[in-house]
Image (cartoon, rainbow, N blue to C red):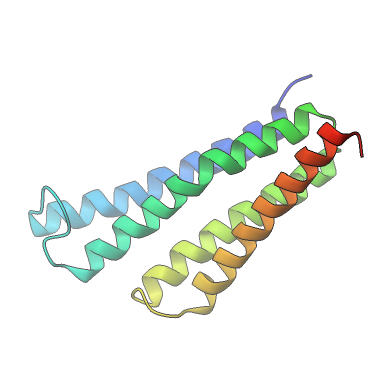
Length: 131
């Protein structure tokens, strides 16, 4: 069995990682900040948007790959993967537009990410238990 569907969402996640990383680098260069955030809220927010994706992506992609290997139907893998990508886009946009405060994108992005994690965790435990 291959991991073609998970590969799609891993690739899309990697593109988002690159985009958020580029934003951090661009801000650092414009403000001549090599390490840390230099007290700039905009850079701090960009760092957190990138960092939050990096913190969540490995476990989600591992769980997604395991679910695919364990026989979860492609349409469910696509559904979960789509929610994952939309959630991460919402979070990044919301964190930036809300300037670190409340924003509907940040709220729904985090909530949807947690739902994806929960669904994948339960599904993989269910596969183990034979459910």
